[in-house]
Length: 409
Image (cartoon, rainbow, N blue to C red; front, top):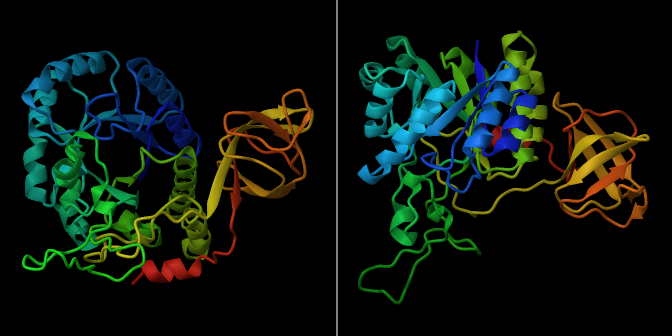
């Protein structure tokens, strides 16, 4: 059985990931989780999340994958004591010191983070001596590398299939720390690789050169986003146990949409369905989340850096979450301004309802000109939809074909 693993940057995203089809989620407490800006979980929220995930028969993995200093270990021991009382289904670790401590003081399954840069079976077999159960493969591996790796170890293998990529080796970057004092290896990356850069020749300091000619500048460290959807059957055949979506800092819309697409894709492949016929539809849905242009990462060879821009592609505006019905109207929690116009609602099973909002109402059923973020509005739609469906407004000019051809190169 192949596991779909989705990001849970906070309690809400964990719940959406599970409802939209994830088999497991990964999240963090307020410390040691390598995404300090993701919101993360208080201890009380973590216990609630753990209970919720387990009530659905799913799993929660906790990230402890920051690189630590000696001064951090007293708090780490406190964290381990807490986790021994409320055990996650696995802890994700990069630092050898953390691995040493965790392997000796708890029986929680250990997953070795992609940050640890495990590129070969020899390292994996060594880590098994420290009670490692799973290896999150380094992103530098190709499909062929993964197949050989899997043949030589009896550990579970996990691989990223979607999300932002870092130009640094396995994400271990010092650029942010050097330029801003914010360490990527301790969860506080400023994404300095996305900035525009010039090159200066030593004897011509007053003549900076752009490496690529673009109106916005040159983005020589900036990576494409990963989208392995077109080669998903090959990844599953390679022996990967868990397919992981990146994005603990992304929106609820991103988490729900990517999870539902990959859920349907995995189920289609495993059931022997017509995956090839659905690829264009899947890609069209993945285009609707905020992203940089997609690539296949390292899976078919070395990727190129994305030099044109550091900005995101945004083809849809995530406007709200459906929270029930009242007298034939749908109650929506507004996330971005809602006003009359064309919209669609996408449900956890990928079923969509397209319709036109002529008018909207407040909780007293008084008509409003628009709905603003954090308000609740009521709208009428042509058919019944599930709770926690997403309301969005999209530009439908994308055909789905061009992007598949580009990333298949």
